Image (cartoon, rainbow, N blue to C red; front, top):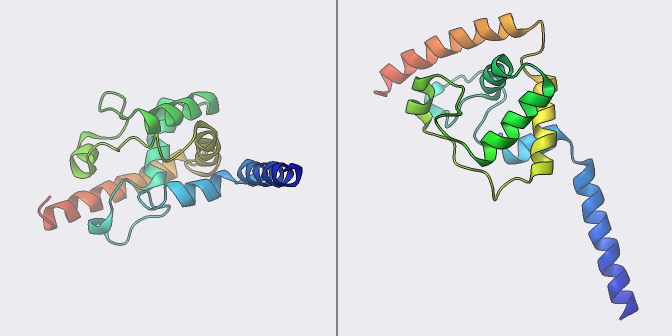
Length: 150
């Protein structure tokens, strides 16, 4: 009985330690990247959600400090709404509102994901480059949307 209990405790601690060391990047790739790609798409017709660099840019424009940025991400991913959305109207028209990820990601995981996004996308001093890239991407997306009848 004591051996079983010890084994269970060791396994639980091991799982907990593994989760604690999971990076924001690994969590993003596992939980978010199936919808939110990390690069400029080559085929806009295959996108199912806005790319992460665009999301990060819009959130940083509204919440430039890390604390506000992380709070927004953590809230929006669990409780998305059109009223809270920071993207352009046509983005919601194209992709619809993001479904709540309440059952797919924990607050602790979201904290790491948000930190990773803040630190790695739309860097301070780089926003103009992102805006320019996003402007081109939006133009391309609108052109592709017309081609695909969207």
